[in-house]
Structures are given as C-alpha cells and as structure tokens.
Amino acid sequence: MKLRLYKEPNNNPEPEGFLKLKKTPAPKFYWHIHHDILVELATEPIESRIAFIKAHKPKNEQALRLRLLKPVKGALPQAVVKAGAELDKSDAEYRKSDAGCRKAYAAYCKSYAEWGKALIANMPAIEALHAKECPNCPWDGKTIFPKQTGKDGR
Ligand SMILES: [Zn+2]
Image 1 (cartoon, rainbow, N blue to C red):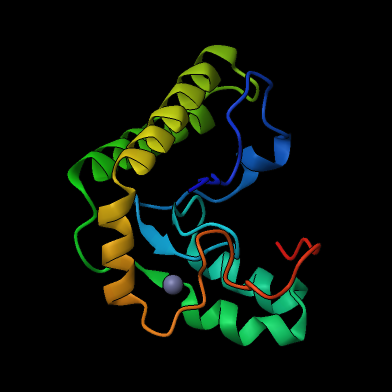
Image 2 (cartoon, rainbow, N blue to C red):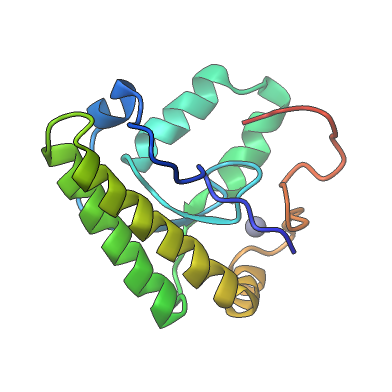
C-alpha cells in the first residue's frame, strides 16, 4: 500500500503562511483530516480545519468529511506516538525560530520523515485501530471518496 503523507519533506523553507498557523497546544492524532490521508497529527486547532471544510469544500462532500474527521481514541502504536511527539516538538521549535531558519527546518524535515517511517512500519496496527473506531468508513487506503477519480478534493 502506498502511504501518502500530508506533505513531502524537502529542504525548501515553508511558505510564510505555515508559520502563521496557530499551533495546537498538544500533539493530537485525528482520522481523516484530509480525504486522502488516514491518520494525521493536527498542525492547527481542529476547529480551523472544520471551518475550512464548511467554507471551502463542495457541499456534497462536507457531511462525510465532517463525520469521519475525529480524534483517535485508542492507543496508536508506541513508535507512532513517539514519532508524532518528536514531530510536534520540532514543529514548535521551527515556528519559534525566525521564519525560514534552515537548521530548525531541517530538523523538522527529519522528524517528518521519521513520522512517515513509523506510520509505514506500523500500518497494520493503525488500520486495525481504524477499523474499530471508524465503522462504515469508505476509506480504501487512498481516499474517503473511492468512487471519485481525477478530482483533487483536498
Ligand atoms: Zn475511517
């Protein structure tokens, strides 16, 4: 299974907008923040994402998006929790530093790559937890809209 992360780590500074996002107070995992990603660490208060969905997503997608977007309640694999905490920490450091600070950003990219590795290595356990917590879910390993193709609904 091909795993898609929210963004691909690279060595370019993030756009300035990222640094202006309000930071979440503590690392928190959610199912289906984006239609084509199973589990993510929220990078901003989830209320902001909900407001964005209501304001900008197609009306016929909103109910499903809002129904499936929810916090992970059970225990994710320890390696995933640890990688998530590291990612959250370097994200906070990066935001505290001057915009575009290369060193902090490089550390953030490294943590992000580790987060991806932890997810991939623990996907069976994550998918088992997802199956338990998210009944009647159309997620097919790639998207919550499996029948729609050729459309970027993010
Ligand atoms: Zn689901």
